[in-house]
Image (tube, rainbow, N blue to C red):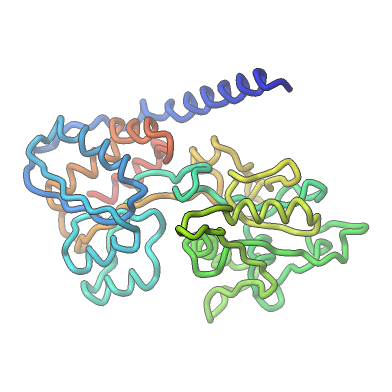
Amino acid sequence: MSYRASLWSLMFLAICSTVAISQSFESMPVYKPQQQVSGMIRIRGDKHQSVMLKNWEQAFHRYQPDIIFDDHLTSTVHGIPALVFDVADLALLGREIAPLENLSFRRMFKYDPLEITIATGSYDTPYEAFALGVFVNKENPLSQLTLQQVAAIFGCCPGKNVRTWGQLGLTGEWADKQIHVFGYPAGNNIANFFELKVLQSPPSGGPTLPNGVRWNCDLKEYSNTYDNDDKPVISSDALMMQDLGNDKYAIAYSGIRERTPQVKALALSVRDGAPYIPFSLETVANRSYPLGRSVYVYLNREPGKPLDPEIAEFLRFILSRQGQESIAQQNVFLPLPAAAVDEQLKKLQ
């Protein structure tokens, strides 16, 4: 295919994807103030959401001009502590709350923070809550796996482990070959997401492990390489994809941005009997793909108590047609589908 033909193909796919994503806006509620509010909203947390947040704030001022925003977006790790010490009203996180963060909040208030999903993560943008795929070498006959099978490959659950390709139904030369597993370092935020969504789901017919998540002890962990100024030079994804392309008996979980022609993404199913969903922009955007990620806002709301009016109005705006259309315009994170918006709005009641 020529360069010009490839360019037109990419443009066509981008237009189709934008149309597919924007069609859901019509069924979202239009923001109309339930009351005029004033005061300050203090926001702390993820710096990667700063553009999206500024767009929301500027648009919100057209409806609520007496609101003042006090933003300090340095890192996701600052969000929950700011809630605990009452220096923030909203905590922006580019991942799910960590167990220790939730524990510190519960120790202080005796209940959990309220979690609101405000957007779908990115499809393939580095550092922006990108979706994860399970990849194999292009020579591998497999095309799909359930999450339980993925857990049995990457995790350690005695009696349920999958360590050879023959255990997944492959025959011939593949039957007795060891599965080589690649992934991110255990403990980083991407690995934590994988633990939450995959490894904490027990293999079919098996129990969850009483001592928590355990990784396959043969996991080869990949990290970014950095220069002397601490700037990334080669991403862990690129290193993984390079090695996976050279090892037909390997499997990796990774973002899709660095995929090469020598590897392929597997379709995933959340359980036996459920449909297998391919890894694509469309399936990540409509949230049918099992390993798409989200970005969140957390807040301190005592159960049974109403939200402060200014907080309620701002969150209703974020979860409105105007708020979600604004996400689509910044071309990083993805807007929520209408059904997901409805689900989150119910949490505000």
